[in-house]
Amino acid sequence: MESKYTNDWLRRKIADDPDEDPEAGPRAIPVTSRARYGIAHPESFAVAGERTGVPLRIALGVLVRQLRSNAGLSIAELAERADVSEEDLRRVEHDPHYTARARLIHQLSSYFSVSLTMLSQMAGATHEVDRVLFNESVRFAARSDDVSRLTEEERAALNAFVSLLNERAKV
Image 1 (cartoon, rainbow, N blue to C red):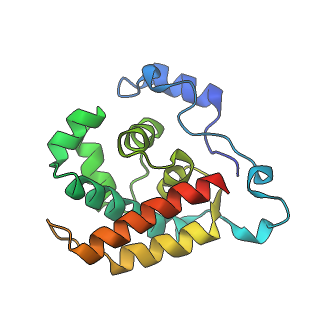
Image 2 (cartoon, one colour):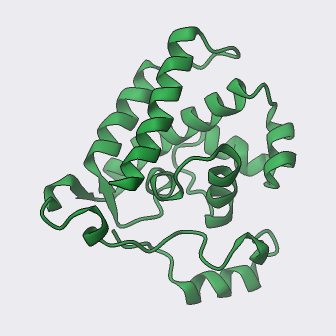
């Protein structure tokens, strides 16, 4: 899987954009290859595009909203603790056409201990998308309701989905 972001592009973006934080690390979105996932299974990847991007970003919004709710945090509290913009968090949670910046995905990945590789795919920051991730993301978003408190069933679905994200990153 190849990242849309190169190291040179990221360095220029950080230099040009005051919201980007070079302290977040030298590579916010990892460049990976199919070899890591096993070249024997190229059918497990799909080319990323608007058709896959919007459903994945919807699932990313639901995931972030539920992780935040599960932690008992408001958007303002999460923004402060994860050191990100409140506006960016609102857009991730509610706008499926918004493509989150590399730093935001990195910070959320670190704060919630969720695979950066999988969040990057969900945010639309990669050229290819793991088909299992896509299918499970759509299932997760479809069975998750937007409520202020998670039911036991939603909490179980959230925990199972986060486990899947982290496990898929190890495959």
